[in-house]
Every structure is written in structure tokens, then in C-alpha cells.
Image (tube, rainbow, N blue to C red; front, side, top):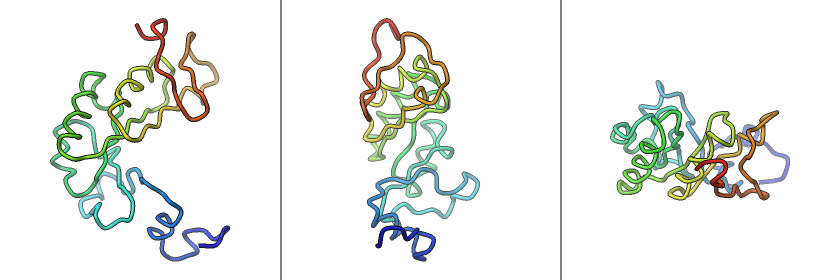
Length: 152
């Protein structure tokens, strides 16, 4: 693929994404429209976000997605997130940890869950005008574990 040519212009979006070394695409279709989605038809991983809300949804996702995006506010908290990550791994489903507009305090437990994941998107505190103090420390593309002053 030549630099500057968009995937839309190339006419083969999935191949273009693979050529660009895209590893994972999150929730490519709305939950209501993902019944025909087949993860094995893609050259990269497909990750459920809105289509994954609780551990019991893992059966519903079989074959449609090969990753789940665990968000604490969506799954029901820290304990449920750990449970979801453990069960997903036991079922051979990849684990991503994400967040939805939160401060360092809300992201801190997700940093711990991310230890069980291969992908993490935990940069929301960086986009806030003001964060809590103390806050999470970010070094380039790495988020450091929360300090005891931030999260017990």
C-alpha cells in the first residue's frame, strides 16, 4: 500500500487494515447488528465492547469476537472485572481493558485488571482538564501502577 492512500480509496478495507498492521478492531458493528459477525473472517482480532456487558455474555459472543473489552463501570466493578478476565482467558478469549472518561481514581483499579490483558486503553485521565491528586503516572505509552496514596 502506498502512503497517503486511504483504506476507503483502496476498496478493500479489511486487507488495508491488515497491511497497516492493525491488530485489533473494537466493536465494528453495533450490538444490534453483530449477529452475522464472524471473527475468523478477518485478518485481525475483533473485540466486543458494547456487545460485552457481563460474563454470561461470553457464550453469546462465541465466534463473533475473539477479544472482549472489560470496563469496570460496565461490568459491575473490580471483582467482576477480575472474574471476567479470568473466565475469558480460560475460554480462549482475548482480554482488553478499557475505560470511559474517568479520573485517575476510577482508572486505578483497571490498571490492576490490565495485568491480565494483552491490550489496554487506559489513557482517559490524560484528556481531563483536571484530574485528582495524587494521580496516575504515565511514562510515554505506559501507565504506572497506582500508588497507595491514590488507591489504598
